[in-house]
Amino acid sequence: MDITNETHSQHISRQFNQELEQLKTQLMAMGGLVEKQVQDAVEALLEGDSRTAERVRDSDTTVNDMQIQIDEECTRVLARRQPAASDLRLVLAVIRATSDLERVGDEANKIARNALTLIESDRHARGMVEIRHLSEHVRKMLRDALTSFARFDTRLALEVLHEDESVDNEYTTATRSLVTFMMEDPRAITTILSVMTILRALERVGDHADNLAEHVIYLVKGLDVRHTDPGDLDESLGE
Amino acid sequence: MSAASFSAAGTQRVSAAVVDFPSTSSCFDIEALSLAYEGTPALCDLTLRVPRHCVTAFIGPSGCGKSTLLRSLNRLHDLNDQVTRKGCIRLEGQDVHARDVDVAELRRRVGMVFQTPNPFPMSIYENVAYGVRLQGVKRKRELDDIVEWALQSAALWEEVKADLHASAWTLSGGQQQRLVIARTLAVRPDVLLLDEPASALDPISTLKIEELIRGLKSQLTLILVTHNMQQAARVSDYTAFLHAGELVEYAPTDTLFTNPRLRRTEDYITGRVG
Image 1 (tube, each protein chain N blue to C red):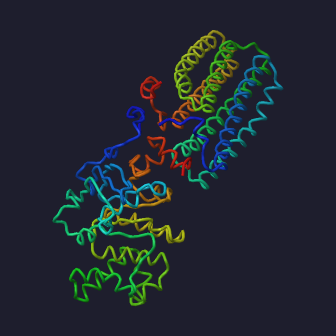
Image 2 (image 1 turned 135 degrees about the vertical axis):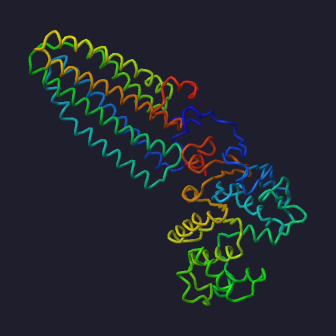
Image 3 (image 1 turned 90 degrees about the horizontal axis):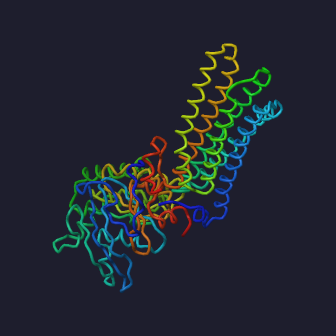
């Protein structure tokens, strides 16, 4: 039995409705913030903008605070309401999702830190095209995952799950070509290692978007698909 | 439930076979049971199996038929000649309405505890010994042993052993309810039916009764009617959701309270309908 956004907010207790809506709203706000952090960190690198990179690093504490605040609110809902069925799954999905979003914030922080290193080295670094392309790819996954959460949309969540393999392939291709550059020019090793760290961080953002999509499926369908191949899911989900 | 085993949501009417346990482990088999009070339907074509040595909860809104169903199991409706019944109830494979059934013996095997504690106007000891004496046990030593065993089984012995001859009415509500359970246990039933046993009790007494219910399932089959869904979730192994005399959904409690199959069940247990 699938839940929908419309039926989910029809509790007899309006206050309970509001509490659950508040959890979703806070989660979306956190998602928007970390998505912007990833975007800003990459643009800081591509534009050579150290101020923006510093700002991304400074805002990491805001993300951490949001995670704590949302987790505390989830704990209160569990204690007060003893939610069942889809309400319970929503609270559990939010708890899991905040953990993934906090990690995305950490990855954005890592990208900004390495961007500063590259900007300060004042050396033209290879891999910028790959970074731009991979960042657009994973940012779309993250946006779609958050949208699927907001809309209880398992079809969109499934699309995100199917994208993960493509991201992994893109990351592997990019790092292989960078390894070749390092072999050709050992003087570039330090900067290329920073680029590879950034690419790795972006690949991890894709993994967390993947996790968010799995949480959506759990929330809507009651299925735990965290260790299920996306190819096996299509028929089971009826998508 | 894995993704591979998931199946699409079924129809609104669900058969008893939703619950996955072998028929050899069932205590009660209820088949196509319908019941009416003076022509007004109270139960409609219910079919379910109640497993042995488990706690099964019946939940649902007021008037859904859960107490009516419970009272059918030891033929309490025989006392009301306005009740008409169709269908079959089997206890351990035997039809409880068969001609040769001794109803008194049925009610010994299938004991009942009601919402309001109803100790007899006797001492604690005599409350427990009463039914045992009726069974023909007369030797004091034997009665003493049975009374102690029953009070221990009901988690009341330590609180009352100092004065077993005090009136049952000197006990608190929670203690009286445990005394009633001890009285029922003394005659060695196979099944204990509990009709909202804790709804008149304070929270601490409620928790003690719930702990007792969980502890008794190694000896008995227990069937609990409750309007408190959290209690059903805490205490029971299987839960049947009834609505308007129909069995809507019946599943392992963990499943029903985390991922029910049907919208009606979801709406009831999450408080979207009362």
